[in-house]
Image (cartoon, rainbow, N blue to C red; front, side, top):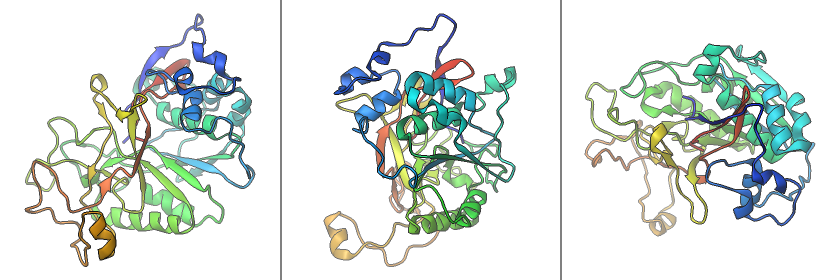
Length: 352
């Protein structure tokens, strides 16, 4: 499923750059100067995480990538307009980054028609690419765009197959000798809609990429513990339960949740758009075995053997199952992201 994204500021011919534009070439910028609660601009993110003055040591060797699914693409002209405003020195990257097309994935560059605009087509793809390039430039950027649909088990929260073909992507990239060191995925699915026979090799192959030194970052999800009125198991019993996401729930994935505000940050949520950053305990896989002495210090117990999928019978209290791996692994600024889509300056809640 795609992330929760909503246009917040349509741009017309009278648009004027906001106040933070004057800080683009400044030094010693503070978070208070660079950031506001509405739009997490690249300047804000680079200032917040202390990378504003960072110079990559090996920009020709290190690379960063993202994944596109569900017909999403990354529109070069939109990305160029965004970078012209927020990271002018990086604007040329909009026309030089690499598209790696897998299984007839979309790399469409034509303008959206009215139906596509109404559906928010490419809104997520644009926001992902714009954010990564604006933060990481001059590190080379690659967009993996993958077509197709995977097997699917419907649930009350997800009645049609909007899941991503992760195995198609994984099978392809594992055969490549040279990959980005970090690859970001902003998509996630209701875990119980992913068949165990599909989720298992997808998780195992994610571990193989990790063994090659590649960091996989996944969004934790956008629906809190699950959509209102649809937090039900899809095993025919309609048991009330929290709904973890996949592949965020894979023990070998690095899952990122979202926070908003500054000093302090709080869990990101937006009731008006039914968005809340997800967290919880997954149910497909047991946690990795932890040695007893280490585990004791973490107030947990080592697991010599756990059934697969994890059994939550008798362990669920008000929808909570404590038998699996908890997510997210970390958090980052994930609410009010800035993006550009067909002459609209857009923002939205993100699960990571």
